[in-house]
Amino acid sequence: MDPVPRRRGHPVGDGRGGGGDGGGAGVARARAHGGAVSGVVIAGGGLTGLVAAERLAAAGVAAVVLEREAEPGGACRSLSREGFTFDLTGHLLHVAREETRRYLEDLGVWDSFAEHERRSAVVVRGRITPYPASYTHLPQPTTLLV
Image (cartoon, rainbow, N blue to C red; front, side):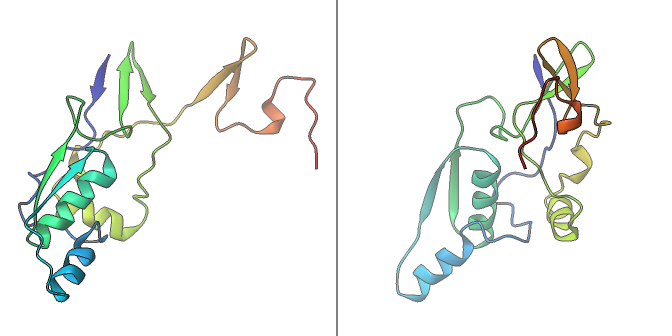
């Protein structure tokens, strides 16, 4: 199963971006108190690691991201197989928020998002159940405790 490309952006440290702190304010505080930050190693190329590296680079700090997988993104990825798309986790990017969309556009990655119609379900006891689940769709007998 090959991952579905979601976002491809610019190299970390190219000076673009905006929104979210991701570590930049911590660097500014360290420098304000006479501290020096020459570089940072970030373990993990998931969303948090990538945003932290971008914000550090924007603050003038070199950052190296270590990632064990072939592609960055951490658990925020999808796989395609036989016409179906499977999300590895429930990560959400709240792209309805203007600041999130603007941040992704500034990074140059907005246009690489894959969009697909959400038709999701799980199989429970051999029955297809819509997801997210509603108690009205659970196999019977089911008791709702209020």
